[in-house]
Image (cartoon, rainbow, N blue to C red; front, side):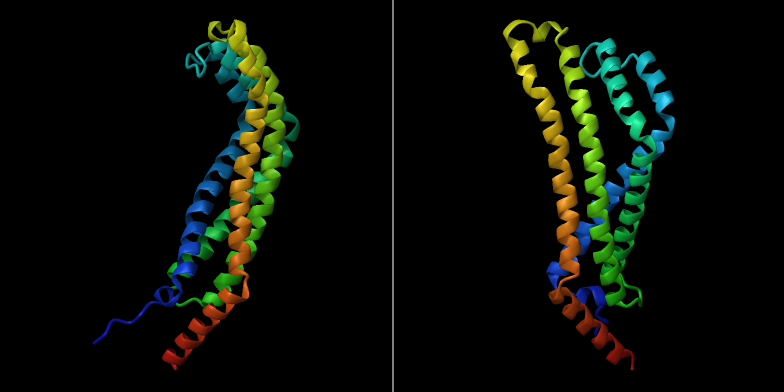
Length: 215
């Protein structure tokens, strides 16, 4: 007796791979969004910890404290709006994760329903991650000059070496924008892919075949 083919195995390889990418991307993005959203409610604790910590990133705890103060000062005015954005992003990522998981292991659920949910949730996650990235870019722009000013006091950045610090604000902002473009762009592409006619037809055909088998 031949083993029954699961619905996910009947999907084209490209659709299964895209669902797997959604699964991984939403897991990481949602986790970090939820963690930062919860952390925004404890900014005062982080400010105290940065001043008393013996751990140093750049080799001077006082410089680390100045950089942390600049970051917290930039986050303070947008705490509520950023927490709301990150909370909504974590929910959207959770929906993407569930829908992608069900596309791979339907367990009797219609694949078409999961396809629509996955496409819509991925587009929503892309929009929210873009807003999150814009807020992060504002924080990065405010931190850049403070980082340059603080690091100028280090011996290794005295003299001609100090000229290299001029690109640091640009690098900090560019890295924030680049990460946003990568993550949000991937979510958008995956969302459009699962909303495409090609995927809809493949899923509808498989749902129809499964319905015939049940009959």
